[in-house]
Length: 271
Image 1 (cartoon, rainbow, N blue to C red):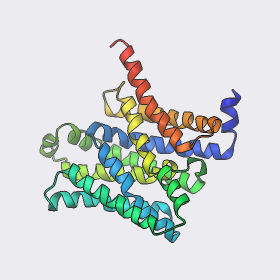
Image 2 (cartoon, rainbow, N blue to C red):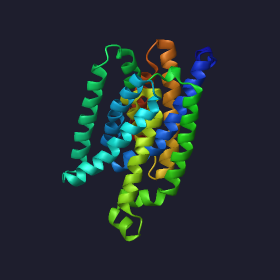
Image 3 (cartoon, helix red, strand yellow):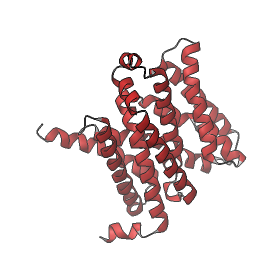
């Protein structure tokens, strides 16, 4: 059992496991709605759209999460504004803002010749460098996001399966949709420092997708997705320790592998 106990006896691995697990639970709670509503492209766009704000924050010496929040918030609001004003579909508006924000981020990064290392950390994260303030942020974000999802659960269910019924019941589907977008944004912003802007989508989608193979209701999907996410974090960190691979990428790869394994096992189990 030393292959398990030795890595977890190290303090930075303990922080990485705790931080990754908190991010996994956050992403499972929000990711369930992303999977149910088919919002994967929005999640990807928000994750990549954070790059300009994060780049500016890094260059100016500000907290990265502040730049990420501002940039991701602008991205989320901008999608709705462009869709309404330009009479475009939501996906088209998301794609335009996604490319625009990503291009702006690359331009900002290209203006600094000494930004390569920071950019690598921004894109791919550094889960092994998680510190106590980041753990505190993740814990607070988990409480707030879980509470918001609990309060808005009825509206989200109605919005996901029948928006017209939601409107009839007075659940304000447009407001519920805006709240869901904000929760996706909050989950990505809170989790990106552990896995980076490119890999956080793995925890947002994969555990919930794996859980959907076994569940049909939202709360069990969230719970099982959280368990799958924490398992992916643990396995990914152990792979990183023993194989000398990048922590964030190892976690993301394990999360995706869990979907394939879950689908294969589910197909082999009699219904």
